[in-house]
Length: 200
Image (tube, rainbow, N blue to C red; front, side, top):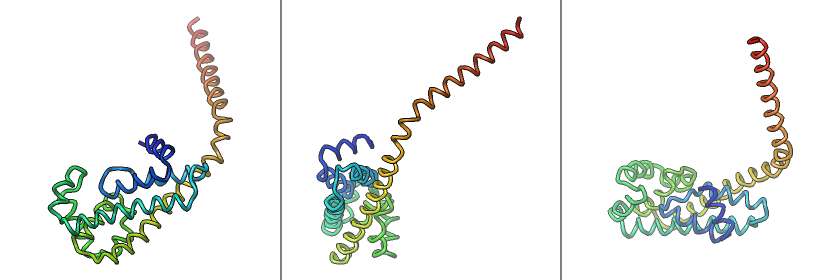
């Protein structure tokens, strides 16, 4: 999956990032955190610039969430359950998530993007529960920017560490493996000669 995500990112750039995060928020199973992390790695390699990368990721998430909110608000729970079963949204999942949403709606919208199992359900629940759109849009936008930034920075860190150490690993790993194989061969050879000597 990571290989395919990287191909999409490298081929379609910012549009690819936008599309995957947009579709993920509608319930299509794109691994959003992996997409953001790989995008952060590609940023360190010069494939992306930070500002348009952050904008494309955030806008993809925001637009997908907004459409999901509209579906929940204007079409309601029956439609979501009817078609959501194809992407893993069931009555039971909605009930569990809705219980939490009913108690902590603002914090859930603000921080729920960091919880993969509930992130997709939040905008639908906000719409079903008739959360004021201005409130939802504000918290959702702030959450999207913070969430996207966090995982892009994680990718940046991974990319920096990889660029720092992969040359050393490449330079010394192969000789080290050869040395280990040679030592194992010498060890086995000595053991076999000792056994042969005892047999004689």
